[in-house]
Image (cartoon, rainbow, N blue to C red; front, side, top):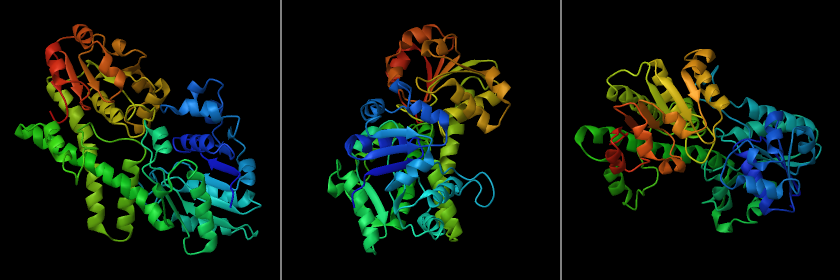
Length: 464
């Protein structure tokens, strides 16, 4: 089965970069990314590729190469569905904020709407691919909706979860650890659909890295991978608190543990906690699924990863207040970084949001600098928490475009995102320009402690 036209519904953090790389690597395939968000599509089509809505190192260059050749961005969803041989569903699946499963289950309303639109528009057979992170057995619901029209169109449902780390998404797509494809391996039609997607990826990914499974294993693998990674972050953060009480150095502990070949060093850096669109959402989904099968011990185990992460964020902010003589009221505190990690403009579940909220509740005056996150997004993140009115957030939080301006006459600085540019700042000048005593709070271990001691900061970091 030769694929000529691909449609991706959803022009977000997964759909945009994934389709850009597929278009680059498969120049003979027409790739159309569609979204009902006109503003987002307009940004993807901006003549200045540096203004595309998602920042990932290397992404703008790929878009510039493929856009207009075989990569297109459009709001005409019906047309793209009608023309496509293969449709990726890459829409948001946030945690439910209402009804059954509130606070834990994935909200699948956008997935269902996509399925209904595909069923309504399609006149020819389609391969429909779950790219969004979904609960186990969502494919069965998709198949039921798609087959409900009775118009004779045949569908094959595949699961192809993404394993992208924001900030390295382009490299992860170009050189993935593995590509996972789940489908109906027990039928000839299912195997043909799997092979069609395998052939797309095989244009640049070695065959031995392309894994095929049944669809249920593929769906669950994504949740499990994120749960395991998040667990490591919460585990080392729990140990960091113990280190503080015993005099141990969490960096030394992490290095010793990470040198064990059975464990490895990745995700063992103590920080303010994990953020992003996947870890918390996927673990909560896993907890909900376990509870739905009455697996209470399993659910409790994984929920503790989330509880530890929430504790770490509160602990970092509380330690800031404690070290600053138990009050930050009226004090200027600079937050360097707002994105949940460097090299991305994604702020979902960023620790910075929760640290800022805690400090604002203590009546601090916050100044924020992040090289890629917009002022509009920062205020939107705070407004979403609902701790105070939008006007109150704008009065208490100032967003600036220069890190030196953010730090000018500040009582304290908190480095909450490990942007490389922060390593190059003139920390001596920053210290001289701050109100004394000056405090530097670093949950990312960004700078060498000796540098801070030389400058004269009263320094505090998670795990130190």
